[in-house]
Amino acid sequence: MAKRTSPKARASRKAPAPRAPRQVTVVKQTVRARYDAAQTSDDARHWANADALSANAALSPEVRRIIRNRARYERANNSYINGICVTKSNDLIGTGPRVLLDTGDPEADRTIGRAWFNWSWSIGLAKKLRVAVEAKTCDGEAFGRMFTNRRRDPRAVQLDIRIVEADQVGSPAFDYVQTVAPDGSLVDGIELDADGNVIAYHVLTGHPGSNYLVGINEYERVPAEEMLHWFRATRPGQHRGVSELACCLRLTANMRRYTEAVIRAAEIAADLAAFVHSNSPAAQVDEVDPFAAIEIEKGTLTTLPEGWDISQLKAEQPTNTHQAFVRTLLGEISRGVNLPYYKTAYDASSYNYSSARLDDKLDEQNVRVERDDLCDWLDHIFLAWLDEALLVPGLIPKTVSRLSEWNWSWVFDGREGIDPNKEANATETKLATLTTSLAAEYAKQGKQWDVELRQVAAERQLMAELNLTLGERPSQLVVPDPTQGGNA
Image 1: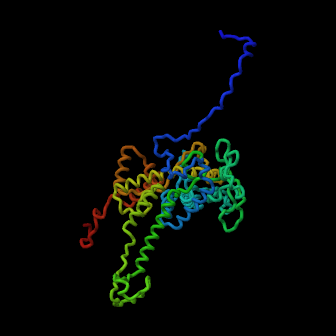
Image 2: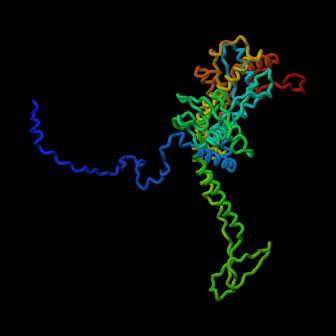
């Protein structure tokens, strides 16, 4: 039970003395970690530019613009960078994708496939996709806009694709500083809903770098269903892409500077044919102006004054390390752009069969991943084309089932094996053991299995009519002997 006291006794008590102010000592907190990369000592100045910005803040419009412009400059002036962009485009797109349909009606599959191929060829879809790949490599992102081309035949599909440069997708110039709206719904020309879905793009009506300053402050709001956007996201929450050459720009600049320095040194060594010098005391030789240039006539034999000697400058450029330096840089650049060295340098002289095979396998994996991303574009384009094709009389057979029951895939150009005999034997073994199918093997070659089998059947039928047999070689054929008047 708590002890109680009367009010009088409580009042007679002395008030407690006031407490002295509490002194707080601020101790500087140091980072204590077992990782060397987390230390904050003076030796960590290498990471002075590291930041904690978000993905969209780190890739601000100004940062992307500077990197984009420098990447374009290097591509225009560096043959290796230009070759990288062209090689990636040709490897990925080739002659263009073909659609492999499965609607439940084989005849309808062939009819729709032919109609798609004719339309894609007429608008140059393969060329535009190659431009998109080069833009993604150099600029960091590719944009495509689907629109109705009124110059096309009104009785056919009028859908067309226009590749848009990354410079034209963004907020207008007067509002360019505010890359993100207060509610977070606008990220540098890309509108997002509350769930983070892209709902529209702001496309400037004029290019910011155009000679004619028209439309740089005006934009169209294009619904997301009419736009195609392709970039490689490396961070969560990233909505714009940065040049894939960003990590290589300093390397390519150093390579060109080193090459120019080597050439400059070689030119100096070639221009200075010889030095005239004297080892005698200055009082014992005739006075000569230092660094004076003396013309040497071609084919002339001359004498020198007493006490003077002549020596030729050794042309030590290009140095022996120049080739190794360039190869080392190209190897680092190849890793940055996900290409094997022999494709970056276009030189496989240092490869043997095993190393070439391994590098080619790794490159095939990268191409498959890139094509998988590209299929989002192709699906989007195909569905838009189909919506319009269904309205064209006679273009789509009426016997096909509902669109929800369709299946399709995309077939690209195949790659020729390094050793065709080994590739053929491996394919034959896999077909015999049912570990692959004709459709899969033809798809690797960029061909459609049903078209190829019909072609083979037609050729076999014609060969039977002409009494020809497969497998006959010139050494096995019976050649008539004209001197005997009959068969040999």
